[in-house]
Length: 88
Image (cartoon, rainbow, N blue to C red; front, side, top):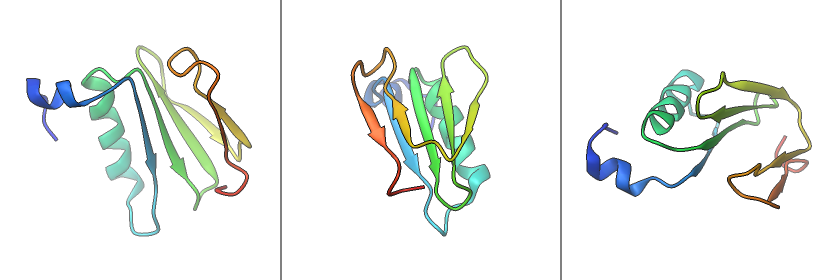
């Protein structure tokens, strides 16, 4: 990824990363930060191995939730709720 204008145009307001067994958490965290640096408003890093979710929001510290059952789309995706019971 890069911080060029073309990359920024491809991003929306929301991203999800679902960690697979072969993914390194640090690599995904860096990717999430790059998404945020390029204008994404809300991002979820879902980590089934550690049963946690990292929530990325513009202008705020990363929030870590242990074993949440649902996630809300907040003001970015009003009314959207992701059920995590089968994932975590």
